[in-house]
Amino acid sequence: MHPALALRQLVPSLKGEFHRADTRIKLWGVRGFIPVPGPSTVRYGGNTTCVEVRADGEIIVVDAGSGIRFLGMHLSEEFGERPIRLTLLISHTHWDHIQGLPFFQPAYESKNQIRVLGHEGARAGLAAIIAGQMETPFFPLSMVDLPSNITINELNEMEFSIESACALDVRKPPWHLRRLSALHLRGLDQLFPG
Image (cartoon, rainbow, N blue to C red; front, top):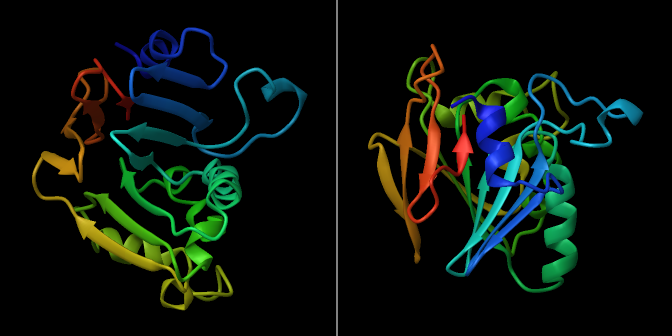
């Protein structure tokens, strides 16, 4: 199934949210390549990929495209002085899937814990790719300057769990020629069509 069809089936209303029992999914960004604001993108949004999943009391964020900036502002307002603890899954390291991380407000607060998971494998590794976009001359702060507790772990296994949330497994979608992934949350048919 093509990614756009999978998302349309997951979120039939296309209003950006999906609720099921104790699982909530919100789409903060759905575009590929570059953010495109303006009247022509009002219906589906103009931000690049970022999906928030709330399941079993956990906050799971899929990808850090430009939509993560708005998610970060929302989380900071929601949590106030309370610490934010979340897991960020990077489906792949194309720039449109990581470009928003330097603008993620919770990364600038020392009380917060952000666990980043993904598989880069082909080049320098996940941590180097993510940190690379925040090096001089591209950005005024480096990853080490961010006060939050950020840990980056390269995934070697294709199945893993996040605290109390259901296990996820990573699969290569049959429609995709490259080594990209689809994320499946047990109990939901398909969470994220890489």
